Amino acid sequence: MSDTKKRPTINDQQLSLQMQGVSDIYAKMQIELFDSMIRRLKERGNADLAENPYIWQLEKLNDMHMLNEENLKIIVERTGIAESLLREVIENEGLKVYQDTKEQLEEELHRLSSDEVRNGVTDALEAYTRQAISDLNLINSTLPASIQAVFKSVVEQTVAQVVAGTKTSDRALHDTIMSWQKKGFTGFTDSAGREWRADSYARAIIKSTTYKVYNEMRTRPAEELGIDTFYYSIKSSARAACAPLQGKIVTKGTGRTEKGMTIYSLLDYGLGTAGGCLGVHCGHYLTPFIVGVNTMPDLPDYLKDLTPEQAEENARLEAKQRATERAIRNQKERLHIAKQLGDDDLVTLERLKLRNLQGKIRNLVDSHDFLSRDYTRERLFSTPTSYNVNKAELEYKKAVLVKRRELKNGIIGVQTVDNLTIKGISEHIAERAIERGGTVQTMLDALCYPLEVTTVKYDEKGQPSKQYRGEISTVVVNPDTGNVISTNPTRRNIRKKYGVYKNETK
Image (cartoon, rainbow, N blue to C red; front, side):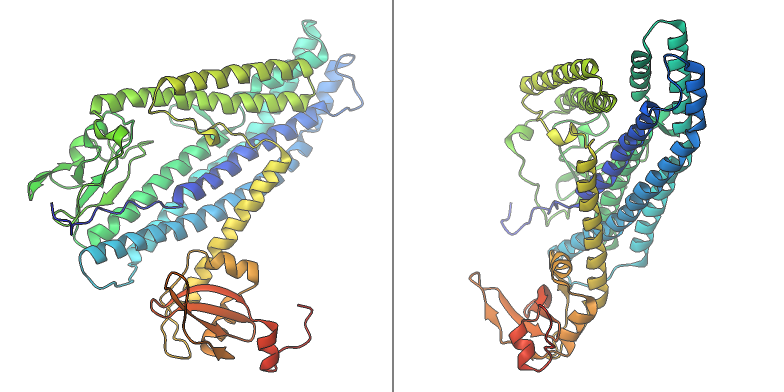
């Protein structure tokens, strides 16, 4: 096979990683709401549960409106951050997947880069955003009523056990709370009547949206360029509909043979159905593949001889690992609640159960070479400190996405003072602009009305750059590509030189 042929580029995008951050918000919100309920139940009032259980019940039920007000504030704040971040991730990272894929294909087809984004692309991304937010909004409408129902049930069941004399007041309250922990607060009830915890429902929506956006933004530019063939990704585990397609060239149309290569039709493997290829929780990606131009990717040794039967068996074992990971997360939540209750005996018991589950997953992974331990899937951010750290990180990511969009819209296409057209921005320019106080306006002033422009310099790798030094910001540009590389505040000595320094503190 000719050495000039290229392997299709399978991008490592940030889409999944950023969407996981959105999912984490709902997981933490579930715990925070449960903690709020526990504080209300444990709070000492005028009545004692052991001595006057019915008065205690009446007092707690009268407190429900205060609990509801607290929780509404939590729900509005957390879901507001999640929805805003979700929109930025889909519309920015999704568009980046499209643009990167189109650029790669145009290069492989030896066509001039058009930099054109068709209206249908932005419309599709907006539609995915609207649908995901609409689905997640169901949580907002069902959670308050669910919290009230759980609180009321805990109070009534606790009083029933105390009155019956079967348990002490503390033991009755703690056991009842723990029995309701597994169910949690209902975020959605499906058509089959199955009740979903709010965080589980949010995680399913976000995961599904991630795969849909990624696959559409990978296939759409190919279809625009007349390419209907794709490489079907391969992993160690796969469902029955996907296993025969792994590592093969596929099409959404009719199967055929082209230039000696068999092309499989996705329609023959359940495309468009929940259990078919690319269906619910599938996890496979399509990468555009130009027959006669691209060659098949090299596979790692552990995937080279993988049969469809082995992939299906591996999927069953992987499902077992995922179930154990969910059990570990749930057990960590139970341990957290036991600590919130201040019940030392319960803490010891729940910690022992957690260690048993961790031993179980360790044995499972050690017994099968294709499995690996991913501690992020077992992690539970359950403390206020870790929640606030994660919240701050998510808000920063959102700020970066917003800043990146502002810079792209405001700078790309601008002609500098020396007639260089700005064609792009670097991966980290948004972070640099936030850290160093650069805005679209100060950067435009530097590019179009600079105090001075330096000569071209070359770094140790031979990459050229020149600086446009403005009154406030200095912008660094690669003159060969037209890409903005970085930005910094203009140095004080430069500003003094041109008489624009005004005795600032910095």
